[in-house]
Length: 265
Image (cartoon, rainbow, N blue to C red; front, side, top):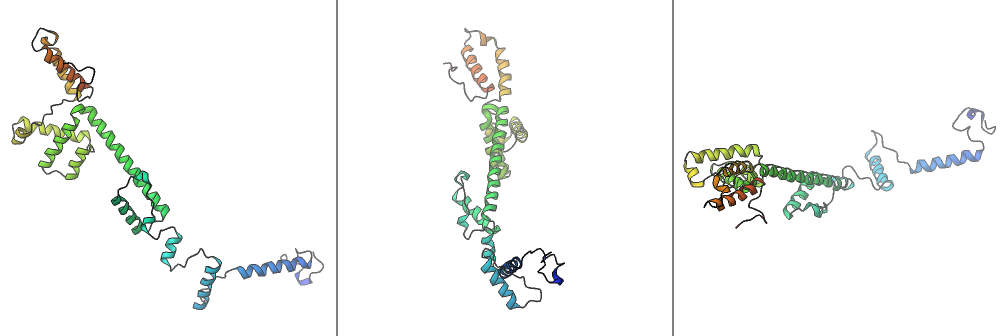
């Protein structure tokens, strides 16, 4: 315990840790300097002048802070751009001018920061990718079942749906390959049933596809192979049956026509 301390302070831990008077003086000066730099928050009963002085001192000492009443300033502090054009759209997004404008207007109306807008854009691009992949997978499933007649059947379904006043979005989905096979097959069977009954719609359109599915082609191949003329070169229909065999074989593999070098004259 320092002997130089007055008796009344010898038990005070805040000062008796100083061994020499100069140490106490130094600590006092540092405390005064700290107090001068500090900002005292006004009490609830503080007057307007004290509050304004506090705000001015905040702006001076901490210029990065913004007045809570300055909405634009607060927005800028949180990264919201002043102009919609400041929202960056990467080239890989492949946005049209209309899509770019719409996205920036939406981001502006929501008051998004650049970082938030980037996150929203990333999520939207991922949704686009997922949707495109889903369409590819759905089309692959349809083509696996329908083979080379896929495009023709989809167009016929869409055409009939238009005549019956189906929803335009559903019709567009048929053409784009968005409608699943389990919804297309019943519709196609209904079309064939209408045609089979000799209805006006069936007479005018002939809904049965000229290109059988791989499964249908296999059944036709089985029937063709039973024809004696298929194996008899002397039969006048032999050449025709041979060509039909090649055509059906190609269709079972999903080809629209017989691929080279299997084309026969």
